[in-house]
Image (cartoon, rainbow, N blue to C red; front, side):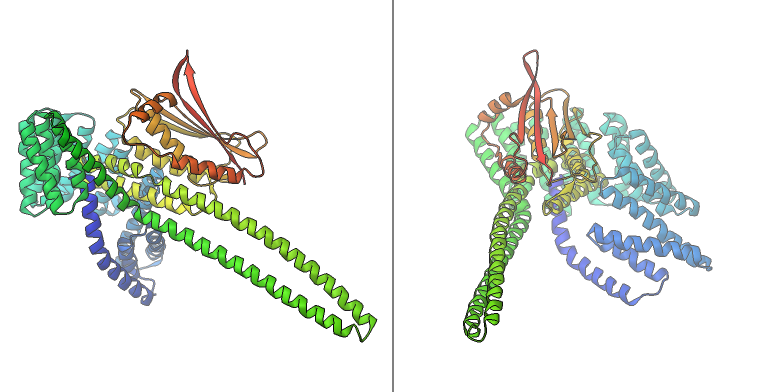
Length: 629
């Protein structure tokens, strides 16, 4: 089953379960509010809230309370039974801290928490806690490609799970080991562990896990070009999915069969299964399945020299992909438009308030003039007093009128800045980036296990949320910008095999937590380097990003350098490409830089340089000068 299919299933399940989850969470919050006593019952309620809460920020807050409360009970209580229960909750809270650190992209901190929790769990010999923590540590090392360490902890899970008859956990660990060997191309070992996992999963009759393992084994047969056995595996997958009415999973198995027959040059059967996958996707309004079927049928028709049919499939593929992208970006666009409209209304209210003050001052001016005329007959002293008052009021009016003019200019500048930020928001969550990132994560679900796939999906979700959060700010620290760029590049890195490297550095004059810049200025240039420079290059692909200060410390210098094919060759490829790339985001960034540049008056804000060696282009360097506010 592919990532996209799982994403749709999770969305449907999440939509239905969120209602029950919200209801459960609300009742737990009411229970927590009523139960103020510091005891293990409050620990239990806090632990359940942490499990139910979908927002990691809120969940982390309750987990911190759980940690503090369980620590206090474990230290200060004289009842051994209560101390033991409190210690269990403390282990859980520490392990949760590791999870939250991992969601923030800090694997090192996450490992420290997991090892701390593991130390206590091993002392208390809590089997379930040890299995969970071993598996989490193994997953982190697996993600960091430290295969030997990952294998060590996965095997611990298998050993303890087997001893304690935890069959589902044991099968998952075996599947993870199979994936590790699959990743390093030791096919026989991978097949051995996948088959061991499959036997357990067949024993416990978990259809979803059986299908996942069979798909992994089928992939190995495809690698060995044992297409007959691969077809057999995928057909068994299909039978399971149809038996449990998993129509979304069935579309994936049908498409896998089409791919294998395509590799065997049996284009008639490849077309047959591709069409069945397409029809089933249409019946279930499954857009991702339709898009993949259109893409596969396009290649099948090309091989059969049915060029008109292939062209029609390509058009339908583009149309379906755009529909998916539009749906995924709808929420971001709505939020951005709402923010723009709100700021626009606030600016209008400020303008009306200023006009009201002017009208009131003008009215006061008339009153003063009338009173001055009447009282002037009483005494010269009174006349002089009111003449002075009139002069003073006129000065005040002139000052307010000057402030009003300045306020109008400021409002206009803020409107331009808001427009520019709105454009940047709409462009920075590039549909191509979302699609490509999901395609890369898809392989983790299709060829790996659910735990790793869920982890990558969580990383992607965390990055999306972080981008949306910073886009509402005018300035963020360089440390935050580097954090976002690192997570983005890690997602992009999955699209390449092992031939993509990147490096982000700062000069000694930069204070990452002090110096600031507008959010998401650098990402579009990095994306252009990958899309237009590195994507078409063969061999090792490198990308460096460097932050420095100007000599007068008035502006920030960011340099993005790649060893790609260069701007000229990229332009030639772009000219022949039917799907044109829109440079909307870089234009929006230029507008934002010009707004910041009103005081410094720098001539060249963005400089493009072709890198050459012996007259041959070896890459591109982009220098962005960002005025410091």
